Image (cartoon, rainbow, N blue to C red; front, side, top):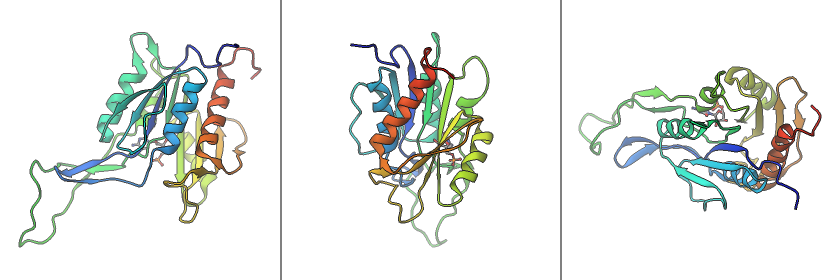
Length: 230
Ligand code: C5P
């Protein structure tokens, strides 16, 4: 059999939401299912990559052939992602950030359950979470050769995605429309555009999340293929 195109390559994928605690029993979260990120991890592994999946809380099964690190918060996801990307053997080759990381956490989570009281509802002071994609994209010897982000937007998808590519410093952005009615959040299908630096955006047809992942993994493999022309 022909060798798999990503054999010997190391990839780190983030997936799922994060949960940011308010107190021991409550948290802030979002609607990410992790389906797209988990499918990307599986697709990269199917092409031979050594994949570490950093997963927030999801109800999905672990993808086959993938090392899974479970985390809850954005801070934990960042620490796990850095540990997976930066090893004594050098940086991972590929990072794909598909997680829906909470933008904010509660600045000081309560150690005990917050109780209802005569003073009315509590006020939550929020603090900004670290941006994992931007952190992994920072130039330097520890940067993966290819860093891919996702952009979920409800309108002006291409405009916002192009801005995100510049701001985050990643190489590619997979942009998708998550407007109400598209069914993307939690659904099985996705319609995306692939934006690469210095190339025209590619509109992909509406596909299953599995097929989007396979097509993305193949595009990644093509950029690592020494026999492919640039
Ligand atoms: O800024 P926005 O959240 O729209 O960007 C989405 C992209 O950035 C996704 O690839 C997501 O995984 C990544 N991201 C991240 N850490 C954050 C916020 C977003 O890695 N704190």
